[in-house]
Length: 519
Image (cartoon, rainbow, N blue to C red; front, side):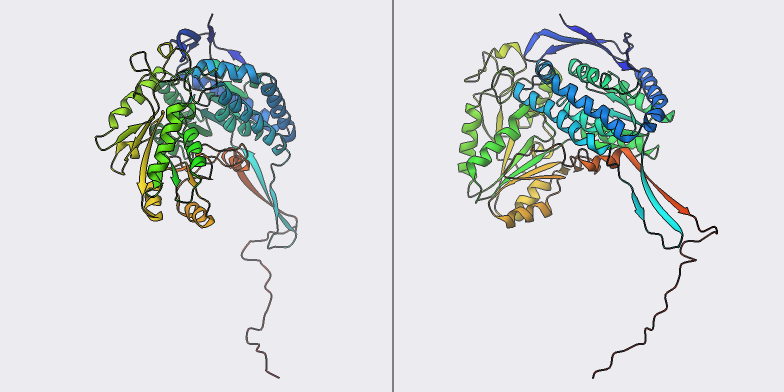
């Protein structure tokens, strides 16, 4: 029987549902309800921010190495509950179990990295230009962080925000996706049992409209000091505008239209393998999913033939089995994907499966694993002949659809790779170091892969994009510390007199007229 899930504020569940209730079905078996979520409203979100603010100063006074101990305990709890957490995720959003396990491992990796950062929140001592004076810099927590994340990676991506935010001495209000409440509640329980004081970590389950209104009200009330958001570029733009009114800079990780460039000297089998996982892993429901393969005209036909065969023979279906991908996360995403198929134009050629759209008995997929009628399963689609004028080139498509475009020279490839205005992830397949460095220098993406997928990222590398993909903020690794701390400078003058910088600086006399004489 499905359980009821609600917001967690100050360590306690909120049983009310001012935003209504919603059943969340298993997308692979729609007749199975995974959870019933009790949705909050804007007022609840504001209350959570107030609880976080009340707890934050006490948490900030806890020595950073001790805060790191809570992160360590969280990592061990996630590790010890990894299989259960992965299976909940697979049931709720349809992520293949192998990918779900990898996603949970990323939380563990993130915790392992930041444990020691509690002992390395380094400032600096800086030489002064005046005698008997010392200069210092310190990292201070920003205060309350409101974190809003999507549900396609319901544990890994939240950890990129929450773990460093809490380590740095902030309190957090996390708003996960309302369509992944069971996974979110499971992760939240691990946070609550890791040793954080009451109110330092809070979770609010609400829909998008209530969340936006709650963030707006909490900012007006001075209850939020930092907003982190992973989601669509359109929503990120609205949140950026809202935060800007309060002189705040949010951490925005947004959509992508990620290119994968194949040059003539590429290992085509390796490129096909990378494009297969990049484009169709998680049913293409990643911000780093492959958008367009940009293939040199000399190898276009051979690459396309190999790629089409790989996609056509890939196992799709039950996410608890060994499949390339399972269902769409929810009917919302499935319906959007079906709408994007309308962007296919007469000049395009389709490959990848026996049909397009939903996989059904009337539109079957050869080798399907399980019962396609039971869930939200869709055909993988390769669209060849994409040009810069096509919507399929210009807009993010969150689903298993990949465009293929051709290029004649390197400059044309770079134009195609950058022309849509997104700048999250990009990949190039080549054996020539010159191609690698030319690509890295000219690509607009914040993350670049060489002979690897567009989705490749590790927990200690900066993650984030530019342009339509974000505002330059970075998550993961030491770089994310700048999102959740503010630098404070201190000068300490023990000379016993007022020394004025730039005015009382000692002068060392020189003889600029001196010249050497030739012997």
